[in-house]
Amino acid sequence: MTVGSPLKLMVSFAIPLLLGNLFQQLYNMADAAIVGRYLGPDALAGVGVSSSVQFLVIGFCLGVCSGFGVCVAQRFGAKDLDDMRRYVFHSLVLTAVIAFVVTTATALLTPQILHLLNTPENIYAEAYDYLFVIFLGIPFVMLYNALSAILRAVGDSRTPLFFLVFCTFLNIFLDIFFIMTLKMGVMGASVATVTAQAVSGIACGILIIKKFEILRLKKEDMKPDREHFIKLILMAVPMGLQFSITAIGSMVMQAANNSLGSVCVSGFTAGMKIKQLAMCPFDALANAVATFAGQNYGAGKVDRIKRGLRDGLAIGIGYGIAIGVVLYFFGRDMSMLFVKASETEVLDAAGLYLARLGMFYWTLAILNVSRMTTQGLGFSGRTILSGTFEMIARIVMSLVFVPLYGYDAITWSDQAAWLAGALYILPMCLVCIRKIEIKLKR
Image (cartoon, rainbow, N blue to C red; front, side):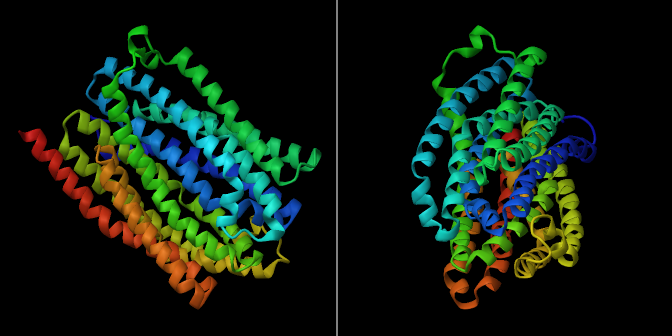
């Protein structure tokens, strides 16, 4: 990504990521669609009631893996392949350690987490079964995402796509088998998800060993080094915390919404699935910009970093406006993927949430592109504040306005968070680029 048109490079890199994100959401949506239509709205609420805490925990893991990828991308851009492989080794070691700690803690604390979220009693059993199994699958989530981040860091966004496609179809097949054939209920959906992720992560690792010589570790690459561990931790942990801090606000919002009853929980869950699907292009673009920024920082090309940021913002804002119009006019109809037409109250709640999100979707482009560019340049600590502003906005909306306005306040909470985060991170991104420019001129 250090030579050629930034726009073309980022788009070509982002397309496989986009397809991968779409397939990722497809198998998440398959869980919700099969559960909601086959097991009913209470079961759907059981799956969705803990979505915010899943975002907190899984988001931390994904952020950490992305941070590992930044270090690899910078060394790859600098053409220091020996040091790049050393970072790959240290990344995998840290992945295993973090996966063990997070899995143990979350699995043991599942009941307390659900009580903290004000989970309604009528859906508690389903929520526990689903969340506990998802937590047990964290090592496989981290394995796949660490390997994918490493592949993207060296410019390969197609191989992760292949495994996501495979994972999606396997998950849908297992959903049907576990839920409809074996009658495992909500737990069947989580077992299907974890099984599919495990198969994909292990298969991806085998393929890397056999096909990617540039990433094949040698004996001298696998010597533990304190400096490499420290740099990876300083890069990756802030990125993970940024996701988690954002998720804390989402948890408070989820808890506030859960207190409004199962209709609001079901409507919010259906709306969230559509929202996550619509966010896929933002995530793909942001990851492409981060890899672009990281490699060009390693190569010392600041002008290309600036062009990458500008082009990324233009594409993202244009998409945000277009998808916002779709959500505003067709959000309720799209929610019928997860909810029967007869459940009019649930559909109305989902439609209202999506219509109001649509008005501000373009702000998410500014937030994601600016944040990921900043992270790609190595300033992951600076991005924590953007997540903090998002968290504060959601907490204020949930604790101050939900008691006054109920579900109406829930439907405006995400937008308040996006605006708060974007107003901070865009100027900070420009400051970080300027710091890099001054550093490289010395």
